[in-house]
Structures are given as structure tokens and as C-alpha cells.
Image (cartoon, rainbow, N blue to C red; front, side):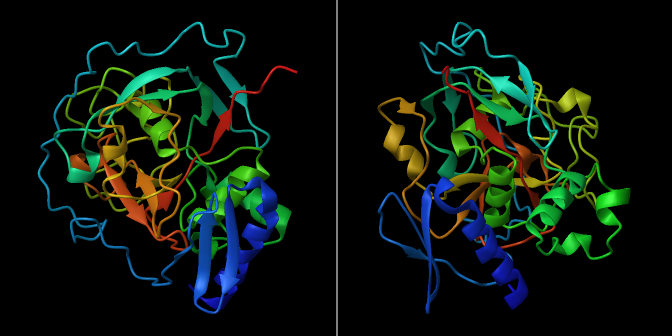
Length: 325
């Protein structure tokens, strides 16, 4: 990261202030990040692509499609349609973005047909929440840049991007910048569990649309050259009506990455899990326009340095259900 972008990242951290769940400080060793008083973990400042857990970069696919259908565990109650019945199924965020409701309930998370870090399959109980119907766009992010008087992402260097590609998802955005945008818009990043439930529902499906192998009408994927405008794959939306959760861009989520984190829930249901207390990389979900069908599965986990900006990584925001006064 160049000095100007480092300053921008620090500015975003100052901007979000006490609203963020992490305590953030600068040191001579680099940025240190700590959450819930856990020991700080030094973040790498390597601008190169973060290597995938298997040793292959996120952009190189070495796997064939071997994902298979995952049935819910016995007794999975699924969504609770009676939870907060007054909550509308769709709302509009402060930035004008539409959000859809994901009801409270239990769903099945993980896969036994993917990488080791997707195992074991386990049950997770989540409160109801809202999630952006689409990925955050260039046009939306440009308003955030103007509001905080910051430097735009690398993809905005031609200055026409937020105008002529306003409906394309923003990229070249670090995890810190994504957090800053969501806070500015009155929201937050989704947790990893929230993201997966929004993508696959409660029936353990492999992809947002089901278990059918993807085609170009389902998702923007399979080594295409660039990203597509949001919401162009109607048939590929999730059970809750969320678009582009498979392909187009990887998406930042809130959680730190830990390869064996799911082992914590091997024998008990996870309740609103928020990921490890600390780490050096953040989870990314959903695959990108350049990836194969294996990496756009709803259970697939990738990771990245939270300071990294990459052309194949974007984000969307989530929001808690407002409490009754």
C-alpha cells in the first residue's frame, strides 16, 4: 500500500471511531488490530496477492467442480417466520440501497465436499437481519468518497468510472474502507455466518439458486475478463432475493479468518457467531468473475489482508433489525 492510501485507511478508521468492534492502533511495527481485548495481531503490509490456504493464489483455480449437495442436519428447524413479524421484507438504506430481510432461525453451514476449512458441517442460529440486495456500486461509493473527502479506489483513476459504470460493483476497496462505507451508510459488514445464510438459505444448497451446476445465466464467473453490472443474473439470486452472491466479486465480511474455526461448533449449535477474536486476514466470500464453479459455491472460504485492495474484491453491507422503542 502506498503512503497516500495508508493515510486514507487510517482516516477511515478514525472516521468509524467507537462504532467499530475492534480497537485499532498504529505502532512502529505496522498496524495492530485487536478485538474484545484479545492479543493484537500484526497485519502484513504485503501488496501482493494473499495466498490461498492451499498455497494457490486466490486467482488461480486448481480444483475441478467437486461440490455436492449438503442436506440439513436432522432436526433443522430452518427460518422462524414468526420472528419479528412486523419487519418488512425489504427496506431502503440511508445510501438508497435496497436491503432484504433474512429471518431468524437455524441453518446448516459448511460443506463436506469442499476444502478442509469448510468442515465440519454445523448448525448455526442467527437473529434476523437485513442484507444489501446488491453489491455496493461505484456510484454509491463515489458519494462516500465525496462525503469524507477521501481518495477514490484505484478503479476510479479514470474519473469516469463512477459515472459511466455507476451500476457496477466497486472494487479495489480494502476491508477497512468497506467497514468505513458501511458505517457511513448506517450499516455494517455481514458476519461470515450471515453471508452464508443469505446465500444458501436453510436447505444446504450448494449455490444460491440450488444444486444445479452454474451456467452464464446463473452467475458472472468462469474466467471472464471483468466484472458485470449488479443484478444481471435474475436466475442466480438467493432464496431471499439477494443477487450476485456467487461470482462477480469476492466480498469482504466482518470475521477474521481461521482455518479450523468451524471445529468450535462440531457438537453444539453456534449462536450468532462472529468469528475468531483476532487474526491477520479477513474472510472473503462468493468467488469472482475469474473463478471456476468450485470457488463460487456458497460454502467456499477465501481470505485476504484487510489492507489489501484488489480488482476482484468488493463488498455489501448488512443491518440489524431495529429494536422496538
